[in-house]
Length: 357
Image 1: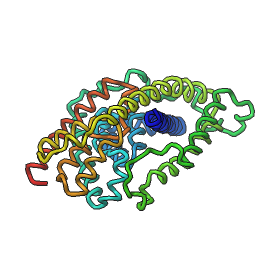
Image 2: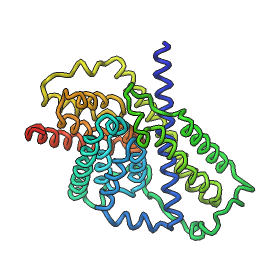
Image 3: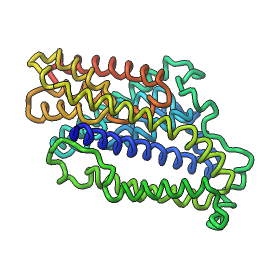
Image 4: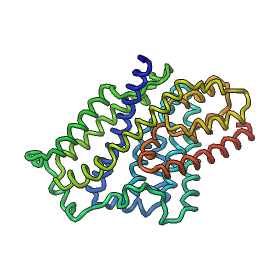
């Protein structure tokens, strides 16, 4: 019972972290959109190749923060389906922290390969996808928009708006501030296997969370100074009420099922010396939207047990927690993206294996 309660609390902590990061990303995107009068995202929508490159770049950010940003942008029609695929191929989730510490040279080579594969795959997916069909989630038909009331939003932004703060503004401020405090004091950090990767401080998860906490102060300023229309219509109605609960519940449910399953299922028992089977296994395990199971392949490669092709196949297929918010937003997009990723991972993995890489 004690073991299950520990697992339950760990899942709850990770769910709060993931949901909080996604909400912060959505709020920051809204901030950029409003203060640029929609011009930045208008240019981005018109450049599909740029979207793919951006998606791949966000995927390379160690951890899942870049992935959460890409999913947030995709769910509001700011990134194409190809750009989403590029992000999911490029990202290695929390395993990126560990690889950069355990096998730094190979990790950088892996990231470079992932970026190239991600861009090529993303461009091809968009090439064979009709422009008016992007497989976007059903919940945000309009995406991020600028209303007439926002034409003077920047001029009206002032701390004077705090004098008669609405309940929504206070709730948003308290929520973001508490989340920042939790990040800064390490209350929401993932629990990893005992691997000595803390020496590479710049890539340590604690540092990344601390940096993200500082960046999130921009959101606090935005909430404190924005006009009431922006607070109620954009931040509260469009983001918090429409996305918060569904993302949290789906994330918590998926993580709980995965963690309980992994606790009673010995993945290492499936390991054999058959490399083609290992590549398929690496791809299949990569489908799991969780950081943790993939550490097995990092360790096996670092110890020389499996070749680079196995690690590469797993890295292409897996995306850590990054796709969990997508599962909450659109099950259809989640399934299609995972299928594409698995196919790309299988093809690239076997090509590398047959050329002896």
